Length: 316
Image (cartoon, rainbow, N blue to C red; front, side, top):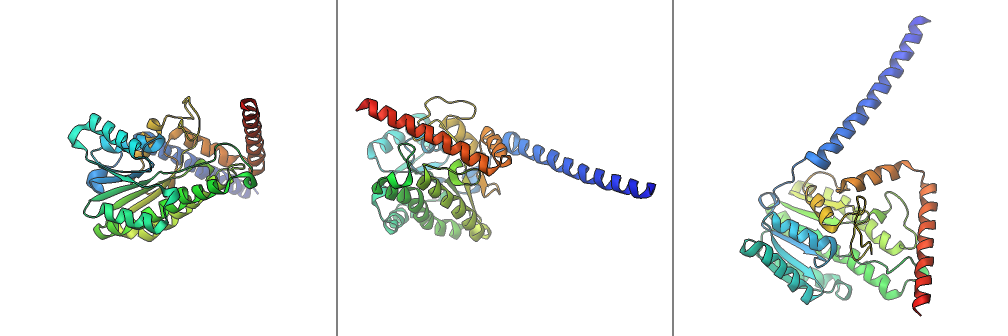
């Protein structure tokens, strides 16, 4: 009997020790990747040119300056020629002749997918394309029930958030596969469904869910060709799109997020949360029951919708 009791105690203790080791190991790994792991030399590892879509505001604009600081030349893709020129001028002012820039004016919301692909194929011909960042994205103006969303808004979200990333990637992958190296980063969103539902922003969230699955699947297809593909997940960032004007620990500036972003490019995680406070948020959200998360989020956005409608009525 004593032997049996000892065996049970030993077995339970052993399982507890294994569980503790797993937690400790996971924490050590998290500290390493978030704070200690050195970023890759993108220029040497992949190539001398980087493509960034949606590069004139927010995360995209911050990313082009981060990439430039690492010595990469930049192919700036956006719909507004004046903003593109302003971004190119700002890069030239800061980095001088060390960083070359080229501008591609294209309105993803009004361009067919095949046309996007052909445009990019022509532009990148002869360039040593090392990095592609699919950052361009649009969202609702405010919390809105699905049936109330204007048709042109739905179409714009699908074309910019889904089609553009798909067709630009389709144009770039053969170039990277031919030289057997390259990195593709799709900027996703915490709304994609991995942590919680996103009611009243349904089409936007669904478009980001597409990017997540697209990234995970295509990364397996091209892993053996030397192309590293990942989807990076930001939560709230202080940008025009989110309408958060003040930054905080959990709502960083675009510059803070972009700096964290570069530290993850080229590492094995197909879907990752680069900014460490967002990573903590994702950890907590995974622990909470989905029913509780869904209810809280729905009530939160209903409140946001009511405030938006009240403000609109006052303006009228």
